[in-house]
Image 1: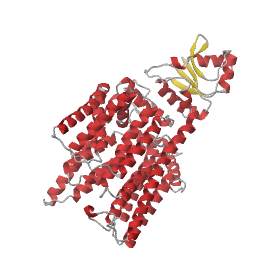
Image 2: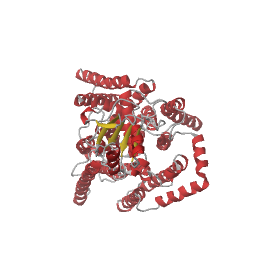
Image 3: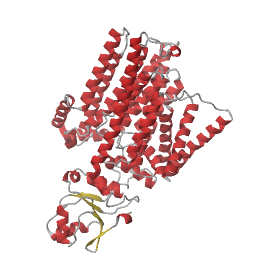
Image 4: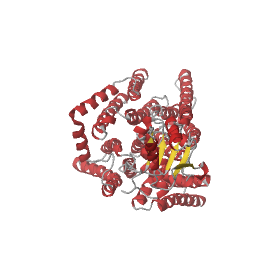
Length: 618
């Protein structure tokens, strides 16, 4: 059934992509545009309280669009021009398929999967609606649901599991990555296309803190922003298409995460620049009013879904973690005080100037790469270029992001987390990846402009300045292709290694003693976890809530040696899960219950623990 469901979903995705192409969306943007359209449609159904029927309606609509496309194509009513497959298409198809197979077998391990990203998908999948005030299993109720909606749609047809959720998010990422090839001036040039493939592979190096085997959205923010910027550039001669593109991508980005506002600001700035650049013979005042009207109107349309979401959060929940609130920010700042702000700032500066920091290394690498490329192309190839100017803009973006990140630590995070710069490299990876993509796109276009033959029609193996430049081009193309494949395989092997390394972690061990529960409940469950740090950081509790679909699960690492206290402590729970052997708990059970227990899942009843076989768990 999962395979049939996947085929149904895939046909719907093809249907939306074909429709986007019929609407004159760039072929390399059709996949991600079709996905974002589905997300917004699902969002509308979810806000109306019709998420479950909405998933079937939206997906069936995609299949219906595909059938209409095939029928019209058969009778010659609709015809699309296809460029055919290029070298980068083969790279994307083969390595994307291999990566998806690896993710399908990957478990979820990262803390934030269970604190929110996987839990919200499970909640929507099995309840069929967005969380309400009474659904306390969802802690971060202010987090927008964009990626969760798409993942929920996918797992509805393919089955809910860690692997299927990861594959769904990878489909979103891979579709957005494909948009980068829309910027190629000549897609038949292997060197240029492989440089972009290499960029995609290298971007995962800076995403290594979370990798693709997690549902966190830091990389999603970067890749969607890149696709949005690509569309603005591609549609500069099609104002209406450009307007719709900006509204769609801005609206969806704001529904991915609250912090996406920074990236929407980048999109808005570039869009305004492109509007100003557009030639017009009208009077300057009329041209200014028209430009600002189009710009503000487009951004307002894009912001509407997020505005509706904020209203929904305010009306549904009394308080919400990480919500956008001036009152919350003021309270946080007054709580930490000036000294707290200074301490956090000092730690922040130390991290920025730490050469061992991956984000700092990425910042320096991009600067060195673009400065070197600018100098070589300008002085060795005698071709003026704007790479140095571009670098200035990218460094400004990084600087502004540093300030916004510092503001988040000071205003939004508890002091204990902020002073350790919790998640710094993960957050910074987003802007490093985005700048890497922007730099690579412009660099590849500049390289193309330096080729000896600028007429695309006349380019052939014979059109080189000399035999030396031809040999150099062929060697460079081979090396870039080789490293693009190697780097991508490195990410694939790294994910495999991580999966193997995590074989004995708590989430994996839990699957060996009990099956996950799929009905929302209030059952009191205790997870025995010998790792104290997992209990004190609430990792065990969040995992238990996600796995057993309850908000009454807790983790415990230490137990009383007193027989009465031990029995009293266990009596308050309905079930006890022991994924890993804990010597203290085993001794307590032997002393208090006269039972020898090492691992397993048990029901607490009548002063005794009854083992629940794996096959009989919910």
